[in-house]
Length: 229
Image 1 (cartoon, rainbow, N blue to C red):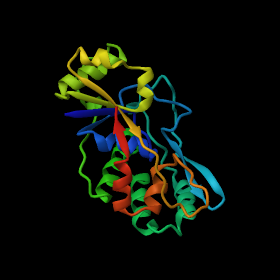
Image 2: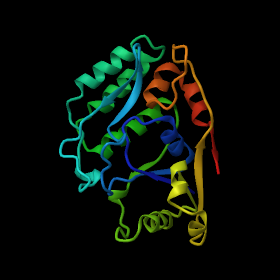
Image 3: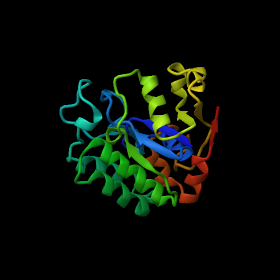
Image 4: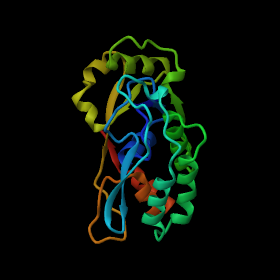
């Protein structure tokens, strides 16, 4: 069984969704310290005037708090208006915008819950069934190192393969996992482009851009554009 574990991000780029797509079970890592000034609560989209950033604020955000202790603000009207204006003429706007709005306006504002809904709803829109769990709901030893926590979660869930992003190469060694009976692999995104309605392709935008411009069939194809190494 292939397991992937990652902190919750709101409508991240395609590489994050490829990690989910490649895994049999995806754990939302919400019982670790919040990441400030990252892409947890913000990302880039493409407006008629170029790349712009949307942000959903996280009141009281602090490195001393866990994801599970924090919530997104419910003030999302400006963000939704920005997305609306940016993609109102996109070919799949009418199909995708209601999905995004449903996530953004979810009554439960917990970061992990909102992000989990976004993952579930987007994969449902694509006709793909995936499984998700939050690490805060699991019983495991949280006092050990980051590496050993991941190994413990793999053993608890009977996963023999742990999937990570390419950045994990700087943090984890395949040998350390192999000694515990786990095959560590990295999900490397292959080069890709799709029609954005502009002359020069802009990579690594929020998944929102791809969903607005590509059919579900095209998105499924692009999700499969990765290699395990």
